[in-house]
Length: 179
Picture 1 (tube, rainbow, N blue to C red):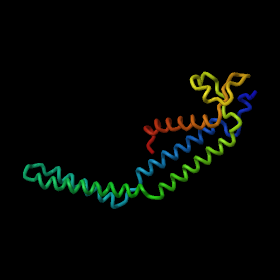
Picture 2: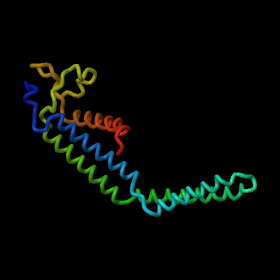
Picture 3: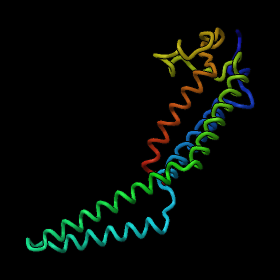
């Protein structure tokens, strides 16, 4: 029970675990962005150009005598937009993306299981009580250390905490960094 901060240090320090979790969350965010963006084919580009051309023609016909022709052009443009949307959804349902997502999920599960196995009986970090003020009892393994009063944080609460923090950081940073 008399573990100090010096004895808690392992080759995988708490900061290293945080960096690993941030890297996995970053891969997850990048995969989602790439899945949404996808690659644009020549058919999609051609459809978008046709839609823009039809909408320009419909907007140029603004007199009451050409109202029916403008409405027809708008209906054709809406139909082409639906076709473009269907092609885009078809591409997103590709098996390639689901394979990447499954591989990423499996690697997360294996890494988290390995970290839990390595740190199951030992604390990951020794944290001063003032940093964990309202939640110190929930995050600590065996209570406060008798020698210096630090809380010994276990691996599962540390993984939960780092995954929440990394998701929050990536959510905030994604506004500033274009992926």
